Length: 295
DNA sequence: AAGATGCACAACCGCATTGTG
DNA sequence: ACACAATGCGGTTGTGCATCT
Image 1 (cartoon, helix red, strand yellow):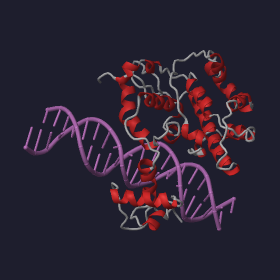
Image 2: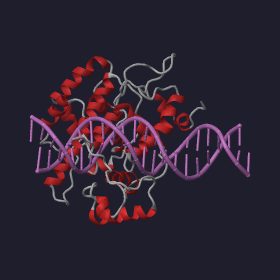
Image 3: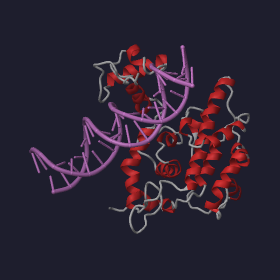
Image 4: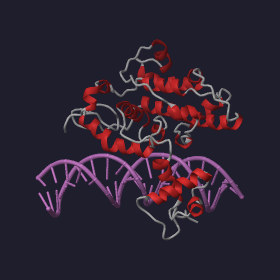
């Protein structure tokens, strides 16, 4: 038996949402929570499929959504995270409080991608074009891929911590960040395998940890201060399924599951300061960045 | 003034993954 | 272990508005 279509009921409304529908959805969720998205339309009286309701809520109606144009820092952060994570919009969005994956995806496709192209930077690889135009290399360098794996693992840890803290702690108990978590991870066998894999690619660069401790960088990516609100608060639970390296994933969390404290700020800052192969020095020139060349 | 074009963003579609019996 | 339902994600399309010709 094949998959049943999401919206099997005929006569379900499609297209833009009206204010009445928004109101019904908001009122219902405020009162009952969304529970099962599939049954929500029936229970609330909306002629929409559950998927549509979920999308409308998460992308538009959620009270914590920050509307309005992206700030320069947000745009820079999106570019940096995209260099690390690729088109994993949900993961990127989890680092930008109040912004949705859809919003970021649109920002990227309509603004940032073009801006990078205008500046001679390949939006896929985040590297400057060669004289022959966009590079035809694989999408990301080995170092970038491993950083993405690290990020996947870290995001998964946060999701797990969120669950555990919800499960074990009373609502009044806040989770204390553990700035050493990333360091312990780095020093574990997981970090070891990462260093092995990454060693050749970056003989001239040190680990994120050593860089952080000495504040010396061999790249020029940094300069952005990040507010990692939602993650620290445990309100974001990125999908684990996107983790591409099961070995890394399993090892990291079998060895650290009892050290379940968050380290989002430190880890992310380290991650963003890490000099991946992508030369993003153009981001340092704020004037140039803010007023892209005509092309 | 009117049609053409471009842009921004909301919404949809299909697939992958996860949860459950 | 398997099948199926539910959910989440990313790619793509549709729509409304602004600008251009």
